[in-house]
Image (cartoon, rainbow, N blue to C red; front, side):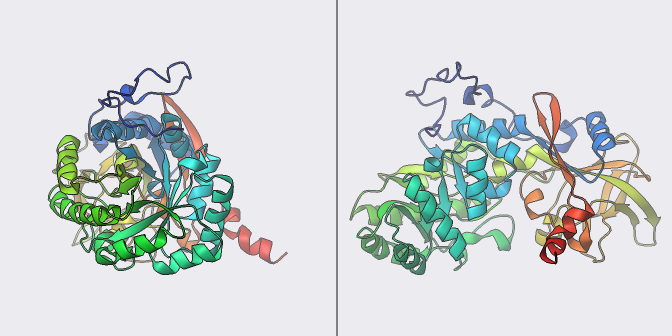
Amino acid sequence: MSSPTSDLDADTDPDSDVDSGAPTLKEYADSPPVRRLDDWGYTHLEALAAEHGTPLYVIDLDRVRENYARFAAAFPNAHVMYAAKAHTGRAVLSALIDLGAPIECAAWGELDRAIDAGADPNECQYTAVNPPDRDIDYAVSLAEDYPGVTITAGATDTLDRLSERGYDGRLAIRINPGIGTGHHEKVATGADAKFGLPAERVPAVAEEARDSFDLVGVHAHVGSGVLGDDIDDHCRAVGRIGETARQVESSGSLEFVDIGGGYGVPYRPDEEPLDLVEVRERVRAALGDVDGQLRLEPGRYVVADAGLVLTEVNTTKRTPETTVVGVDASLGTLVRPAMFDSYHAIRNASAPDRAREPVSVGGPMCTSADVFATDRPVSRPEREDVLAIGNAGAYGYELASQFHSQPRPAEIALDGGDARVVRRRETLADVTRVERDANR
C-alpha cells in the first residue's frame, strides 16, 4: 500500500481507487476544520444513550476520515501516517487503513492491532521509547517477514539491543531537539531527556549506525496539542531537526525526515483551529532543504473532535460553593481532565435550551480529581439527563481504566449514517477474569 501524498499532488490520480470502492482523499478534504460539540445533534446522542446505556463513547468514522484527508491534502508530497496511540480502536484503524493511511506505532500492542485491522506491516513504523524486551522481540520478528518495517531508536542502548538480536534492517534515529511544546508540560516531549538522543550527538551515532543497520531516517516529536502560539516553538524545534538531518545527510542519504505529529485541535470555544496551509509553509521554511521526504504523524488532529462521551446525571446537590452534578462517567472513563487539567466542552443533550447555570460536574470516584468541570455554565442538569463531553476521541478510551473496579464503557461507531457497537461494555466478570483465571 503506497502512502497517500495529496489530491493536490500533480502526480496523483484522484480517481485511481474508485473501482476498488475505497474512499478517496478528495471526498473528505474540504470538510470544516473544526467540529464543535454543538454540531453533533443532541436528539441523536440522547437516543444512543437510551439504546446503549452510559457512560458511552461515540466515535464518528466519517469525521475521522475527513480529518485525515484534510491534513494529508495540506501537506502534498509528504508521507502522512496516523499515530495509533491517539485511538487504537479497530474501527478507527480500519477506516484509516482503507483510506490509505500508514500507521505509526509506539508499542508492540499497537503494531499487532494495526496489522490485525488490515495494515501492511511493510508500511508500519515502530517508534520505540525505552522499549521492553517483548516489544523489541516482536518488532524484530515482524521485520524478518516484512523487511519494510521501520524501527525508530532513541538511545544507543536500544541500538545495541537490536544488534544483539541480529537486526540489521530499516532504522530511524530519534532526535531530541531540546525544545518542547504543547498543551501541558507532561506532553512536551521535545525537551524531555526520556525521548531521543540530544541533537548534537545524532550525526556521530548515525554515521556509526550505518555500519550495522539500513539507516533510512531521523525522527523527532516536539509535543502534543500544538495550537496557536505553540507553532513558534514547534517551528524552532523543526529548524533544529532540519539542521541535524543535513548533518546526517552529509555522510549518507536519508529516505525521510520525520517531524512527528502533535498538531492540536481547539478544545475551548474561543480557540481557533490550525490554518494547515500556514502551518505547512512555516514548517517547510523551518525545516529547510533536506534530501529525505518529510514525514508527519498526526494522531490527536485526526480523532479528537470525532469522539465524545455520553454520561447520565444521577445526583444534583446544591452547596454554598456550587451546584454539584454527579454523573456515571468518571476519571476511569475519561482521565484527561484529572491527568492534564484538560478542558472538555460539556452540554446537556437532554435539554440544550434549558437556562444555563454554573455547575461542577464530577463522577463517582473517591477522589477530588474525579471532576470534569468546575463552575461551568451548563443547561441546568436534572437527574437522568444525558450530558455530552466533547473532544474525547483522542486519548480518551486509550487511557480508560478499571479504577474502583468499574467496567470500562461501550463504544459506538457512527459510519455513513449507521451506528454499531465496536466495543461492548465490560462486565464485572471482565474486570475480575484475570484473577479468577490465575487461581483456577
